[in-house]
Length: 113
Length: 280
Ligand SMILES: Nc1nc2c(ncn2[C@@H]2O[C@H](COP(=O)(O)OP(=O)(O)O)[C@@H](O)[C@H]2O)c(=O)[nH]1
Ligand SMILES: [Mg+2]
Ligand SMILES: [Zn+2]
Image: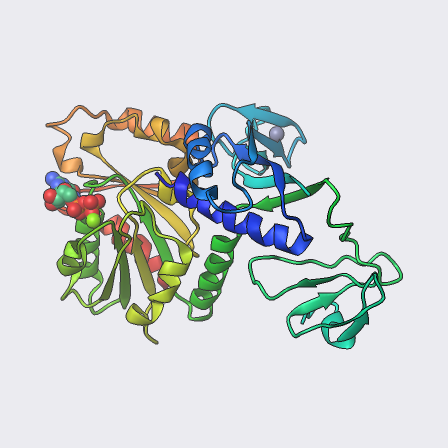
């Protein structure tokens, strides 16, 4: 289960951000997690409080927004959503696409005080 | 000191909001409103955007205020930074690095044994092998002309970039052309961690069945090369190569697929030739 090591990285990152912002309380954190990022929502929700124990992220509300696999075609300009991590345009079949979402694992926002 | 705006040294002494003089040590950073923060930690990618008159775009509001920080920052940015350093190190030396990922027992080590034997005396290779415990794999790979280093990850189910970069000096020398990184046997976790490789290679052995790419789409869509191993067992296992190929193509249309048996040597020529061409 790599979710615990990911959660630990996240908590380290949170601590640094809060230090830089001069914040002492983290009310909530919103993550954007691609459906095909390799990170699973439930195990991560389980791991986060364990990693956060004794840090400013303890007792924080964790909000995970799971994003769909979406690609934007550079050939025809259309956006398509796939139910597999396919880097291919669903309209014209071109492989020249930009991945809009579905693979990312990032902090979207933090509500601090 | 912040190298992008240089204000750490220029404003070494500055008044804070209350009008009291503060001394700003090296590694700290003063803003035009007098607030101070540190850049000493290297975990933060602190960017400066100037809007005209040298005003910092990132706000440093009253510290007691409840507020939302819009961040859009990758959680694995620390690993990605180490991976970037590894990639730069390898590129400077003209070394091809591949990150080999599969379930335990697919045949990563065995394929590497055979590959090293075939490349010995022709292409100088290095191997870093990750396992949760033991150095059995490293022992199997010894004496085949390549320097081998084993990383025991203990409880961790994947290699990460810093771990790998830390042992480059154990295996890489001036002659090295290919670095093989055998990741911990696992189809899920290693996929999320960039090690600084040129590309990932996923292995799938015929006894594992044809639906592995469907069940583990992240790694099978990320890999630039997929090796279907143990094709000598096709008569004995329930695995339809046509279905495997179809499942792979649907997910990853541009991928190179090698079908081989490390045991009988069937299909090995194409694989060895491919590696030789990549490093020529
Ligand atoms: N029949 C057959 N067995 C293989 C082949 N490649 C590997 N094996 C066997 O599969 C087992 C696991 O291989 P190993 O290299 O340790 O797998 P790893 O865990 O992915 O490193 C060993 O007993 C190998 O001898 C192959 O092409 N054909
Ligand atoms: Mg092995
Ligand atoms: Zn298109």
